[in-house]
Every structure is written in C-alpha cells, then in structure tokens.
Image 1: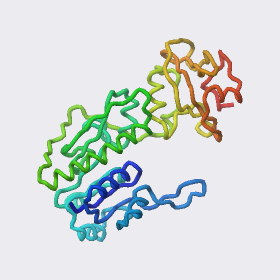
Image 2: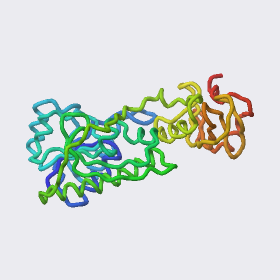
Image 3: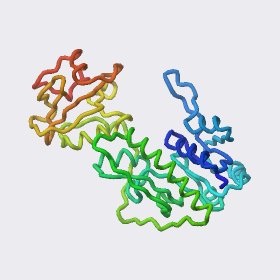
Image 4: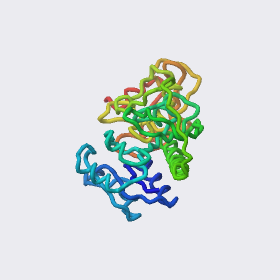
Length: 312
C-alpha cells in the first residue's frame, strides 16, 4: 500500500520502521518541526524524522495542516491510507478525507477506555489490570473513531510508563502492519466505537506528580510508576525536588509524611492508609540512587517529616 505516515516520538518511530520493513511504500513522513532540546537547547530532530532520514523517506514538517498549500501537497502523494501515531497536530477533516481508505490511528489503550493524550500514564495510575493497542479509523472526534483492530496486554505489577510504553510501541507496530495487510486485501473490518465505558486520559502536569502522603500508599505507588520516567514523582518544592523513582506499599501505620524506618531496605513513610517504602530516589542535580546509598549522604531518622525534604 501507498502510505503517508504522521508521527513524532519513539512510539511512532517503531511503527514507521515496522511499516517500511513490511514492504509498504511510505510516500511521505509528516512530523513536527524540530524543537529545542538538551542543555544547549539547540534544535533537534525527533525520533520519527531521524528514522525517516535513515530510510531515505521524504519528510514534511508543517506547523499546522490547515493551509491549502500543505493539503495540496499531501493530495499529490495519492496515498491509499495515512497512518497516524502520536503526531501531536490536529488533522482537519479535509486531511482526514484525503487518503482513499482514510486515516488509521495507533492508540495506546483499549478504546473507549483512555481516550486522550496520556493513556499509558492513566492506565497505570488507575490500577488497570490490562491495557493494549487500538487501530482506529480516525474521525473528527477525540479518539472516537471506529475500531479496526485491538489487542490487549497485561500490566505487570512493576511496569512503569517507560516499560509499558516500550511494550505497547512494539505491539502497535505489529498491529498496524496487520491492519494495512487486511486493508490491502479488502478484509479490514471496522466496528463503531461505543461511548459507554469511555474515560479521558488528560495530559499529565508536573504539579500532579508531587506526592501527597495523605493519600493511600497503594495509590502513591501507582502514581510513582505512572510518572516514571516523566515528569517524575517528587517531594519538596518543584524548584528543588527529590524525585521518587521506585516504591511499594507496606501495611504499616503512622502520621502521614512521617518516616517510620530508614535503612538499606528502604525509606518507609506513613501515608493516609498504609505506608510507602521508597527504594530508589534522586536529589535535584544528583544521580538516581538506592535508598541505602542515598541515606549515606542524607541524615534521615524515624520520626522525621519526609515530605518536607527540599523545603529547607
């Protein structure tokens, strides 16, 4: 099939590689303009652009898709389908209508659950037992299009957004190849997506990654996994946070925020319900350390207020 591919981050890069490897013709790659990155804040290409250049594919980086000029350019590619994966720009109806078979989106959830920007984060945060990938026929709504293919994936107890992202990206690449193969054989079946059971995966803000020890320790442990690697759960001020990378729940009690134990096995902090055992953390400007190594450079005793770290 003749494809226009639209995507930006690593999640999309894996799908682009899979489509190209499967033998489909990628007529053009749409990706967002280069953005400042790194300490020097120099313009840097995204993962999809780097892969497209490696594969020798033409790359377009419009700021938006509303102009008649870019729409005319896309029309010239005469694509059978457009594949969209974490592109980051809104596709106007005129663009959705350009490919002969429409636009297929790779979405990292089992729609209609977790429509929106952060489905992986929200699935972990909510304690879902499973998630998956949906190949969806795009329409003008927010992840409301008809479902072409779905495949579920169990969420492991130690999955973070980072580890689950990688699993779902591989699954998404395999599933979109299956969908394109079925479409080329006129065998791609679609079904309307129900609104019943729909949930919204709002974009994650840095502010919500601050840990509140008045909450249930089980919820805090899920939040830590959900916000790993970004934005990173933290305590203290946002300007000088101590980031918490790994922790688990214990059945201990105490005043929320109070340190119950601090040793090589972890820093145990009382919560609104249960306690959180922190096993990996990072001071601003420092390295990620196990609790034991971190305690070698920080005095912390039972009875101290863990949540005030970074506020001095």
